[in-house]
Length: 415
Image 1: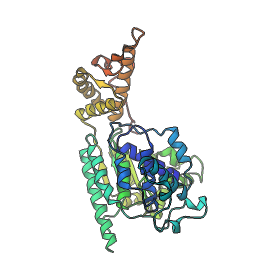
Image 2: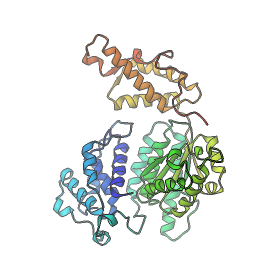
Image 3: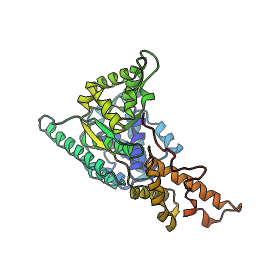
Image 4: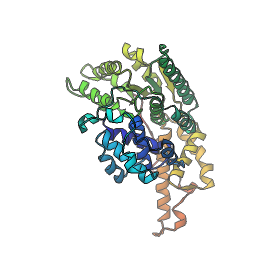
């Protein structure tokens, strides 16, 4: 992965971590500092850059990346251009002198390459010093997520193991239970991708991997329809994930198919690459509990590498109501008291049906409610300012609503 993509991923992760709806120059500055690490301009204050990320917002969706940010990212073609942009942003946002900041930290010049092509090649040491000061903030972000008590406890235990092993490595001692790879089990919409992204950043902070960025992949990204193509697809995806986390949702789909299917080849290639890059790649696979255990047991290589399991149970009705409120707050839509009174029964009724989509259901429920609010506001062909910002109980869809049903499946069906 080149510098541009690494910086973009870190900037998006920073915006999401602080619940901001879009990537801004402050997030871009932080992303540059994360990727450059010791090569960042010496006079750019990391503490000052972090302070720019406050205050925390209320967004719950993935942040957007405006065209202006993409334009600035387009100029990041290697280490030198990344350093220059970091200095430029520091001058704009922190008042640091660009001329003084343009010089990288001591020793960076020795590692800088003489061409843009070779500048995109990481330094020989794949693991920079651990950014331990970021760990408490990342764990606080984990704790701030709605629900997920069991998953949070499992992740904290896993991070404790990795931190202790990092210290043992520093003292020349062997790792204990050193596998970095994890199986996430649970139904759709229960926060697995969000936690995977946080876990990657925690691994990066500890020093397990270089950056901790997240690359998402599905069966379609890994399995080809022709002989010899599957291994190439898996290699390409792994190359993007090196230095961070490869997250494969519904991973059990890789083992599904007839004798003409290339899913087994994808699994075999993945197992080999996990071993080849065991010091700079983390793989997280996710899916329904029973199917995932069958999948892991289908290949001895998977069974020996995936020894950590994190369970994501369904959200409770109260937690889903809180998520609905968070989505509304992000959209700056107020909820009338009668909405909060009506939501629990509506959500509880939907939860009773098979393949309930959890947070995905809640987002769909909010979007349809907003559509009903819009229709109500335009009923008289004029928009009253008082009608555009408050959702009322009448806007919530009834179970027999033409566009909605308590039996509607939001999420994925079991195979």
